[in-house]
Image (cartoon, rainbow, N blue to C red):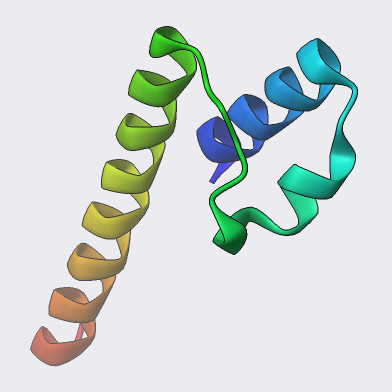
Length: 61
């Protein structure tokens, strides 16, 4: 989660456009190559964390 927020903050600081960050589902963000890679890594880590937590709940841990 922190990595995704970091990318959004970096974009907002670079472009001074907060509306695109708040309305992220409108696909208005124009991220640099590095920001795109960081965002994808953040989303992947979030997905893995949710999947691991789900598996742990199923096993009763």
